[in-house]
Image (cartoon, rainbow, N blue to C red; front, side, top):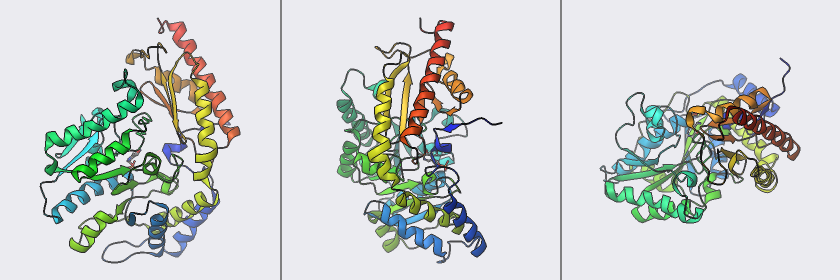
Length: 413
Ligand code: PMP
């Protein structure tokens, strides 16, 4: 219809290299012509899957030298559940079954993915969570940490993990899983003290640490993986989305040496796999995508240029009457819309202030997502400073329109 839209959500946190990248399209076409499918069961594989496994071990932290391919992030997290329980089985500790996650986390929509996730709306449908999954509070300072400094709160929130481990009994806990930055939960950026303390606690009790990098992976936070930005050494990492920039479905689990050694050397066959694990066309696109991310220097572009620039622009939004907090991490941003910015008093949830703002965004050519009263963005990593300026002008306009609605309706009183 001739409307111009700035997609500040990269589709669904995935189109990191932007739309219309010829090398990805060509890679898919070539692979479809050469070999459209072969499976990865029974000791077989295709060249793109083998080459991608090699490249992934290069761009991920050094402990990762094995990969298990899946078709999506949800399948990746299902794989994680089976893999960590299998790991402890092989080591003769089958009672280590429990995986600890967090409220308001998002780990997918399959039975295990949605169980690991901490979305109460999802748990209410379909008899979830499945047994052996426990949740602790999220490191969301506005909700749980007021009255403390952010750094103090980071330690407090991390220690909820220790409390939970002790309540369950450490000998029953298999793993802890978390997104470096909770994405679908509203871009909840944890205090800098949070993840190092989580790592310390996992080490202390010997439990596996899983980093769900489905959103944070492949440059989003300004490093290749979110765990590098926040200073953890995960044993397993889930990935999807940015691995192919969403051009074609692909996901997987990076398996750290600690787990791989046990599974492979002591475990024999791991009875797990999907028809589309290591799909050659998806792997060919992923190869082209990761090579493009490297060629364009997109991780450095986020870390050194557009990431800091976006942070500076968001600081400038803090003076807006509706904005309670404005935060970014790499190319993720969140604005908390509040009724009173000094006390951070929220709007009545029944007013759906976020959806009002989102309505203005869509009508004005900006895709910004509402999660409750948080307005979130995750633009493509190829975005330029000039495009960020355009985006900021749109954001400001939509905030002003939302403010005008709130004033007219008397919601600020
Ligand atoms: N983990 C995280 C952190 C996610 O954001 C998502 C999807 N938004 C998933 C897992 C699930 O991935 P998929 O939708 O590909 O199954």
